[in-house]
Length: 267
Image 1: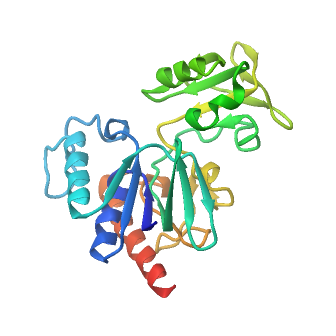
Image 2 (image 1 turned 60 degrees about the vertical axis):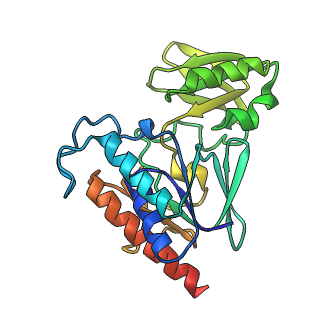
């Protein structure tokens, strides 16, 4: 179990890791592939102090290497669920589970928010993890809303598991239908009957990961110390609101980690 478990490997999460490590706290970063970051495609980042003309990918690579060399553990994977355990937090990512005494959400922002029916039917046909839940729908019709580079491969994995798969890669208006469980996906072309909808995004919707998390629109509600409404949980970066700038994310990551360390020490 780590002292600080960070979801998100962008500037906010990497900054938080460095600060936590300097405060002698063990730290694990749960992050997707670096190329999925919103800043990775930037040919040149011109407004980050001290590093003019650096590319977004190179900046992330340097930050990531620095955090790992300082002692952070880095795991590639997307968080699919968070479970508060009283004095710790369990985070599922694929078939693995990670534990931390405190939790930092540095998830970035999922533009557009949740689809109608997504939160209501989460765990009852709505899933974020093919590896975790695919076998539950063997022999059944499933839909995949796939907006990540690996979406096609994930849809193929569902087919290998024996599911009948419809893959949707075009962003648009979707609605997940059902009362007790998923019964269909509503699309612009009509309703598609299915038993499950797998929603694959680059950035997670925080309150879908952690039910009960207070939000302000699409953003996590935080105090000046980056504390969230759930005790032991802190947030930083784009997920807390604009401006969506690297310098702001790095500063918030630092503050969130300091607050998490202080919280751990009080306990």
